[in-house]
Length: 576
Image 1 (cartoon, rainbow, N blue to C red):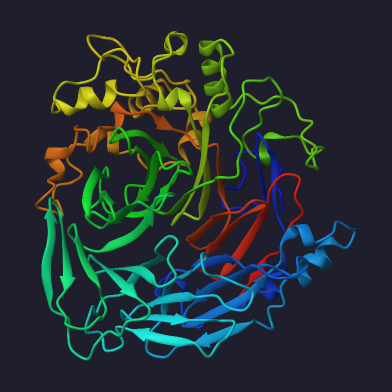
Image 2: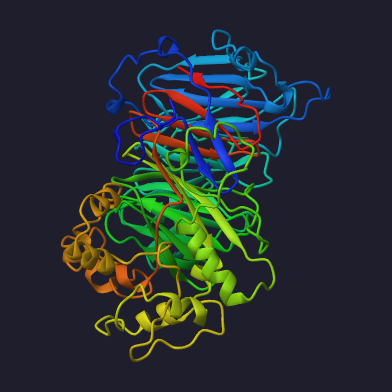
């Protein structure tokens, strides 16, 4: 059902393909009759989550990947066929349909009195004969099980003596066979050892370390028991956490709107960022561990530099809360050679472009213009770095973003001459941290003083809200109307000082941090436009996973979709 009527056609149409500079990403669509209706309305169920694990079979011809997903009170475990094993043929649809036999899961569990909320495989210890899976529940319990052996199962916090709130996120510690971390809606993180019991009484704690906005406690016990540690982080619930690629740091986001990064072993706070407003719901590390992307209730994606402790950019494309953000480690960095750079969607092409051959005309879109300005500024020097990341949200939109070096290192004079997206000089009403935020960035940058522009961004890659406001007043009819339909921040520029009238945390007053390095104002950092922004579901999206040959998304109605990367065969579509 590829769109052929352009951007002004029905915006409620579900997209089945989209295009980037690499080519087409395509979805295999199955009949709606295969979709299973939920027993409860989607809004009352925990978010659908997907966990993947790659096993190590002795026979290379055997399938090595397994997938786990939850829907309502049920948990499923299937074999996930690698698309390289699915041969291209006229009967590709039939092959893909047979890749997963939905009627025969490897394991299926139905729970009473509680619902699965999150889960995680232990990739480090996974083998063809055994795989460790931890599952968190809405009542606070955590289950350890082996879906392959099936007889192995343990239940932690069974009597809810440790924490009575729902489990919001679970992760195995990197390269550990027995340690995992669990976050709860209470705002606590707990470190568990699968080999230790939880005890028959409520745990007693002693303070181990304390800092601004957090405290770490050790469990007082004569014999080993769980939890080993309890972290109290911020104010309100914790929504998600993620370990850095090297496993040294852990980043947490919560309802107080703060991103906090800790050195895990030393329990030291390494950095803090505050959302523009509302809670932060998701966090992801870049593959090299230099940047973090967050999303939340401000409808924005925010990119934060770990080394510089500053907001690098914000992304403006969603019309509601951002549920998941993730970096794509498999998208190659853009090089400075001239071959085709494509970005946009299927609406940008003529009907004749129906294959993945990459022989299309050059399309100058937001990301392309940004790269052109960078290329002319650098004079064709060394290859530049491009980070690709994606986001999905409550608005059923899927967005892809490119973070390029003209955003990361805003010091290019030619690009500055190309356009001034930030108008006059920045306001000095904020604290002294504003100048350090806007002036910092990769060395060699000039100070932001007088009427100089602190950032050098391609015009269409980053548009400030001030510029949008002036453009709107200028008026260009339906074109401007169409441009703004994807966005939900129209009122922010009018009242950005008054959004946080009732701060959730006494430790971090939103009115005081707005305009500082913790939370720059909207016009003080680059504002990215999405490379792709498409409606791909009818219910809110809750899953985004990047794999080497595909992208996996899932929505709250239980539809798990696979988007084949350009030049790859389609794996399959799971419909529950």
